[in-house]
Length: 359
Ligand SMILES: *Cc1c(COP(=O)(O)O)cnc(C)c1O
Image 1 (tube, helix red, strand yellow):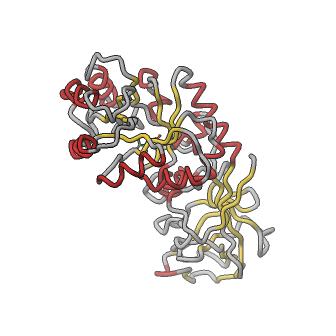
Image 2 (spheres, rainbow, N blue to C red; image 1 turned 45 degrees about the vertical axis):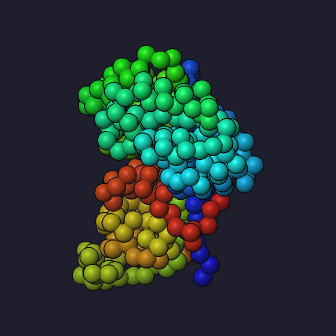
Image 3 (tube, rainbow, N blue to C red; image 1 turned 90 degrees about the horizontal axis):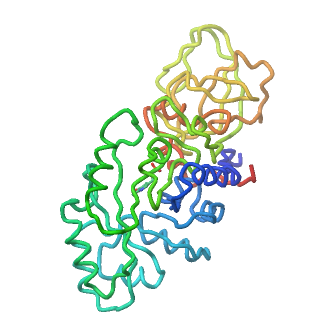
């Protein structure tokens, strides 16, 4: 059997989502965040489709290498910055922007004898307590950076929200206030990620940094990207490889988790956690067969899952089965699996065949 699991990436949806962000944040430049292989959609593919972005955001220098090798000439911002002196050579060679979030990185820049100016995004910790400097030190940090000939004068000040996907919580407003009062220096500011672009007009500053929304994804409870005008950029599908009659009272799959309430047809779909479909998705999680819902029964296994075909008398071997996509939001599957949509799209494994379309 050839592998049947397909991830189809909808390039038109990626472009639509970037246009939607431009509508929401018309005065902002847009950094398209393409870390984690473009949230699992494929780094180079996503970057090409989003060539209308003003910059790309990546987690690590290696992603910058891949983008430059693919001929991408845009600004590329390494969101974790540099770790060691050798990184500066690579950052210069590839002309990458770096986020500076830690004193260790300032020391590396100070020790650097190359005069070519580095483009720096200075990161403040306004309440997330992950990466960034104390905002109280902003002016001193800026003075230090500006005293160095190897730092470009055009520094961007940035910070990151911890709870922008919970618009009712005060945390985001508090972070915004701390960010606003960090310095009166006239610098470009950047704080909004996807959820803040959607919910928080004050956060749409000089640069917005969109990740999930570009892929049509939401991380908000009980919402999906489509609720905010975005289109899902990935469809995950496979096919039905067997239909078996199973008797009443028989149990299906590992652990016998599902008991057939009557004699019924069980469909076997060629996809499992070895492809990135979550094992934690319980019986009842929907798939789409010929456009209609069929529930998963029993435990998702490595290569296969079983579905209840009682409502699908027309089902035939080789029918395509949609696991998520525009007609079945990945957010719904993520909720059933106790996680967020990002983890599912990032988790598609290498054996899945990737295709693209212009939808
Ligand atoms: C991942 C990331 C983003 C994008 O976040 P989304 O919620 O996916 O839009 C923005 N900024 C930084 C620093 C990030 O690490």
